[in-house]
Image (tube, rainbow, N blue to C red; front, top):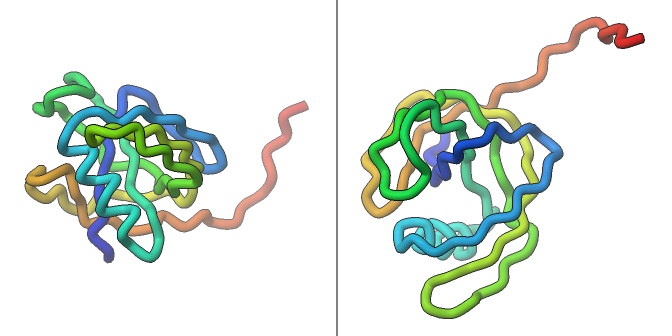
Length: 120
């Protein structure tokens, strides 16, 4: 069960979707720097159930997805423009302290085989 940086958002993201982000908060600049220094530049994204994206103090979902940084533009002054691609679904097992940025112990939520849905 890995510990990953987390980026709570006010929108739910699904595997395969693209996620453009503009990073300006110091804690998320530190998150981006840590991801870029890692072998796999990945972080978790979960829905904010209550509260705001900026400033902390939010209530977070325990289900989300991993985001991989596909492109990163350094805008200077610890500001970044990212293009991320959403990957595997995750379950948050434990939230860790937000210092220096939100982190959580997660488990990859593997798709279970089943019958195809008839959408016609």
